[in-house]
Length: 267
Image 1 (cartoon, rainbow, N blue to C red):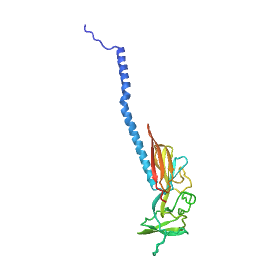
Image 2: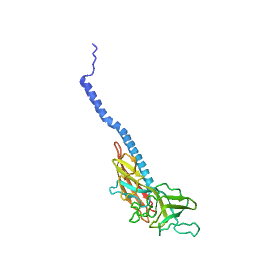
Image 3: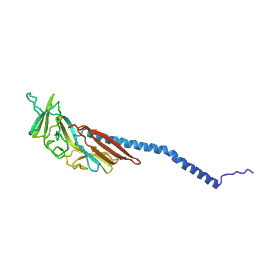
Image 4: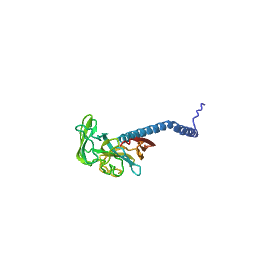
């Protein structure tokens, strides 16, 4: 008789168990390249988001009024005053007809500056010799900045333009390099609730507010777990240095990135 032999139940169970063990060993090894790719892609995305945030912050820092950068006590926010234009004012009378230097001994309503000048927008103020110290602090409303409500008119010409103020103003200190700055708004960057925000279009305040009141808010990134800012003020011989550290967080990744930016100190 022709006997046909099959597999017993025990043999089938043993085969299934062996196949399961083989899969359990091989599966993690096979998945490792996919996990590495996913982690690499997540890190690249976090780096890209951080680069965008650093670009915006550094763009504003490079246009900051000298000595206007300040950081709050916790290091979670920094503020600056944004410069829209700058130049050199006439400090002495040339002896020619129509020469109009800036007078620091009394309130002056007009003065000449070097080169052509665009018409300032409404709300623009002029700052001369802001040091951040008592008596020369624009944030505190010291006379180094024109008062709120002062209208500035520019009559552009070459080689000299004329600036006219709606109300005479006396600047207390001349700039060693005869520099003047036109500023429009303070800007604050702050981290809160795992987000990085940019604030502008608000009035000058004596301390760093996080966030400042009555400001326009713009979300820079919603994947910032935390941040740490610090600033070393410049001196007459070197520029200032601001350190920007962002802790970027993704679904399965966390990345700490540090950028440092030199800040000019020409007053």
